[in-house]
Length: 219
Length: 219
DNA sequence: GTTGCCGGATTGTCGGACAATCTGACTGTG
DNA sequence: CACAGTCAGATTGTCCGACAATCCGGCAAC
Image 1 (cartoon, chains in turn cyan, blue, purple, orange):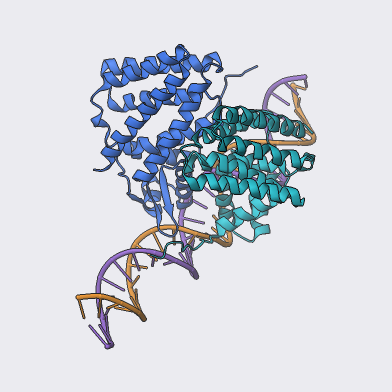
Image 2 (image 1 turned 120 degrees about the vertical axis):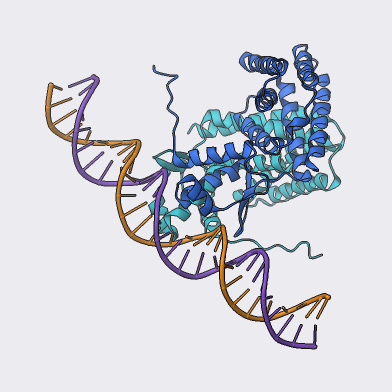
């Protein structure tokens, strides 16, 4: 009884962290920017200890990095990290693809819905931020087929890492139509249980994404 | 020049966290035990804010859980979490197995070494704590074949979660010899590039581990 | 060019304080 | 006896101020 009732817990720390996330995704904080504790405490109007805890959250998410005694800075994705992230993504999404057949129906239809959503936004020429969100959601739904929330949490962290530096270089994505078609194709193959083909296509898709992202990184 | 030189950073927070980890793995803190901030601060001889940060680390590792306004407690593994952990482990180790052929030589020999180590300890009848460590190391080495440090970090977190409740129920493991043989068998199959067979064996192996661990949990 | 040293900035840790929140028991009411 | 209201105690969430430890950059000395 009374399921579906939740109450979001609004702690000061969480709100502070959220504000920082927003600023980072919005591009107001470039990668590499140092985040001084006192400055943030003043700007956000909270105590330094609160800022400290909020930064701890972001560190756990991989959005910022802390160098002992030297403070934290907005995480900058170096090529090694980028390739590591993509290796991890490949593993997780491949596992999702292999799990398609045995996955519960709601996960499968969630994936379908995310693809539809992506296609709708792509066709409508929505704002790039929304488009990126929808794109990420598709990949998230693929990994979600594994049915493990712990894996999904990692996927979110990985997406967070790349989305951050992606916010600055997302204009490159001129070929929205192709992108949408590619993802539709993946879903299509899944529906037909062409597992090995999906895996192959997935690898190529992610490989391409990595190189294009890596190229964008080098500037 | 001067590579290989490192200096471990000893922050008070890290030491406090380490002490808590030790106590939990040693069984001095049962799952479910509440961890009061003031009490810990007194016992450890540090400030409450320091304890708070240390707990933050452990929370990120999944070793303890925090309920807002009610404090943190040593994590207790419920069946749902257990099955989730094993689903994730299966995905990661399966990916490791598939990556064997393309993995760099040092990762492969690291796996061999871990199996040897496990066998040596198993034959010598070493203390159970060491044995568990070696066992976990084998599985870690399998997942490491994927070559992603982010995946490996997740593997460590997963092992942390189960090792915790395992510390209390590890005496069940009477058949060390069989266990060692099973892992040797896995390696053997890998060496012969019997990928699909490895995957199958891995699933059974992990499935068995889950049920036995689940049974131990129910007491 | 290397070494030694200094000053400013920032973090790491401390201790104390207080409001907000939760728990559990107690109480009254029907 | 079931139920709602109340209250005290315990604990967390957040704030503040303080100070030592550490790091950086620059400058002087050799």
